[in-house]
Length: 546
Image (cartoon, rainbow, N blue to C red):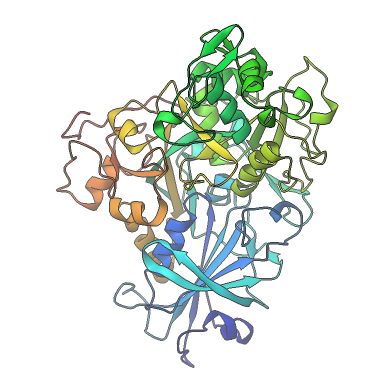
């Protein structure tokens, strides 16, 4: 954290909404890493402030190249300013002081680790020339003033807190990251591999657990529903008549979700099964079932080649999927090759240039917003998603059947043209995670410099404490999915750290979700024993064995 007097250029915008003392000092906090936990860190930063003093800032939607199509309001770059609440920040602050919290997501979770291990500098937005644009809801805080700022970033600032969806040692091998310039897509830094959860001068603590899902484009989702006899019309395909089910096309309730096995998903993601039409369910071919149901859900030209919307290396989202489905990297093994099909061109749409038998199509995406846009584009033929270098992925405007990588806190209203599927017949919900039936779950880590100023230490300590509170996690991060409550959960070790008297309920709490399962061999909050490439086991401190 750097201490500096608030500039005239910033103060006119950043301090709108509360009185500014002539003696005010603005303390700046830099955060980087996981986009999935943004709402938590921004809401809990605002919770350290005087009521109604917070202002949120985002980069303009029209930010060039890789920030384009990032889900709205410059999702990769954000900032918050507010007046310090000295009842909550008691160390080193006065009532005249303010804080500005910057957060960058570009490059994914590795941005929350590499700067602390290898001394790189993330890029942050600049708060200049911003325009008021209504309000933004921040978890437990509610609505705060929102500002949209011009497209401008700067490579300055030291990292005060990094947030990763997986443990640091996952960022090697297939997950070894590369940083790209946000304005032109050029490589600016090749991260060194990170092989340990510990580093001199860095404190690593356990963060929330995140339920991951397998998202597919809506047209593929409906085709799977048809082949698995879920739709509310009788379908005759491959000489078999499937009686009418009870579900409408795209319906995302538990009973209406189609399913793939872990082996099936792994085969698709590795490219060993690169044509969706090879799938048969109880003797019914997927393509035949989709054709019998509606030509509207068929890919352009009947091309059933697998399309894989893939996050770039360094993404915690990608790392979680590779660990779970491909066991890469795990237990320090960083020698395996990238589990991706052929044709990973990373430039323009290749569906129109299909050469049968040569593999699937892969689109490398820099952020979660473009992941969603990739699935939507291939479901609808739109052209909103761009790859890591800023190139439109679907220039032909074709449709395709696509699979991606996403956390279950996304698309909670099922309003976007993609859906989550079940794994081996089990939906990704709190209840199924709690019982141990669904285990595609990773534990995150939060890391920060051990040597900090009094003020930065106070802010970071407050944020770390907040993420251990199950009620806070639920309020800041999660919204119910049509198939059930999903998203983030607190690990039992963190719940006990927050409240030593905590006792597991007999069923999971929808408003204070805690998981009794862990991939941390030490079952504590230090994260030194965490390896998201290993299996989940029951924390021995659990008072209830689900």
